[in-house]
Image (spheres, rainbow, N blue to C red):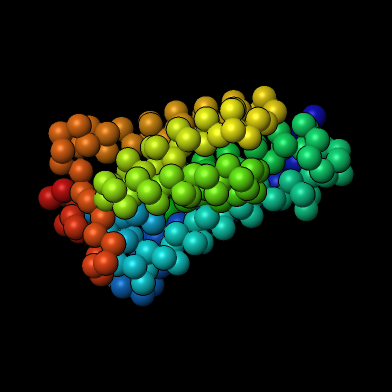
Length: 222
């Protein structure tokens, strides 16, 4: 049942996700709009690619925090509306708030609705919903990244493993399983161009011990 407090929380979650961390940090400290370079996305990966780790790390951490904070609004605001903590209704409400934050990251009102791919914000949401599955995703992401040096492939694989994790390894309620499937589909959709480049072997690789990723070219050259 929708109430004033639940609708307000959804709006707050969207606005939280809409904070364009990559754009604001790039403009404030480097005079660069990362959306005009590299992949053209306003996310952590492109910030690493264009501006290096000193900009990329805070962008990544803040984007994760956006998802975690928005999802946890269910605890601070929604328990009185949805019932006991960890109830099905509470979980559904928390998932809705997390999705609101992800939508905010993808289509940020504060940055002309030109956002990133939402992976870091999705991860923050997963941390708040299912810690064990989130840690499993981190492990898989790191292993795939170290082996292949492809952030996109690592993200796609981690999304798939999350679905497997909440379904079979850490059996969860139906809402979380369905959410896991939706996460994987969303990652596939937002990484469509990356998948095409991976198939053509043209995807940029991450060089972890260099200051910047390769491929930091103006958008019209990438």
